[in-house]
Image (cartoon, rainbow, N blue to C red):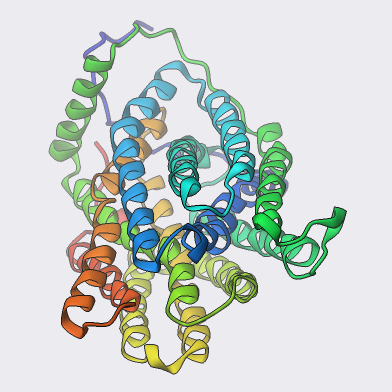
Length: 451
């Protein structure tokens, strides 16, 4: 076997899943523990606790902190777009995908714990948002490598369920860690080890718990996942790496145009789904009046609903196909998002009712999107294709934060109110609807192939 030249790009060949054999359930569960273990960054930090903390009154006005969060989220998304395909490609070339994933996971754990230093003062706003942004970048890159390992534990007949199990385990892990920090630190006036709410200590200590959780519970995944060393390939510089990425996109356009269409559609709707997570808890506190403790209780309930729904929809994915799951989920989210805007004056009851219904559909759309692409990835190209998946998502990742901020400003101009945060949901709905429209003409995975 000869080593391909540095400029060689091949995205053809049999799908990696087609070459996969049956997998024991314990391996699937161990693989899913990475989702379980890293979920605190998504659930506790990005969504229900730290994002609410960093947009609180201690750091500035509601509109100021919400806009700052949108800006930092957009910048992080741009960095992911630039780095994901190149780093994914390098993982494929070296065959050290799992080794890279192990290091990236440890970095996410350390950055999570580092949020302990963010005191509730305006001067720490950008410190917190900076750490959050860097953590988001590393977490996304780690997700590229993790997604590319799905062929080690799934087959074409089980990939929907396996992807759903992973996402579902993540949501259920989020419940445990949310309840843990709520009961031990946030809810009591004096929590474990004498922790109180003074200087945000209860929230800050929770960040230490998140870092420890990530480092500990991702270990089972690394016990079953293995690097797949390949023959040493020539070193490729940064400029050449981007040229190869562009060549891969051109090759995909020639060999499987509907895969490119899917990447475009998923870029839009996944950005909308990210917006639901990034700004949902912020809306709960800033618009519907939920306290930080109430947001955590809602988050726990939401994760129960989302975890069960994602696992159930995973079985429908294998039977009906991921495209149908995605379209149904997006349509439901658009309707429910509009409902939250229209009935925002209804208070916490509206948010609890419609918010919980939204969580039924967010996880299934994400899991089905992963399984759709996993069915197409050629052997040895997981990092590269999932890198493109992350990049196409992040190329437009500024859209949801931008739309959220623009609609807040539009609401202020139209109504003259000081707090028009609830208008931001219209921006998220707009992105989800655009993703639905672009996804409609995409052929089901069984009707096209990469190569």
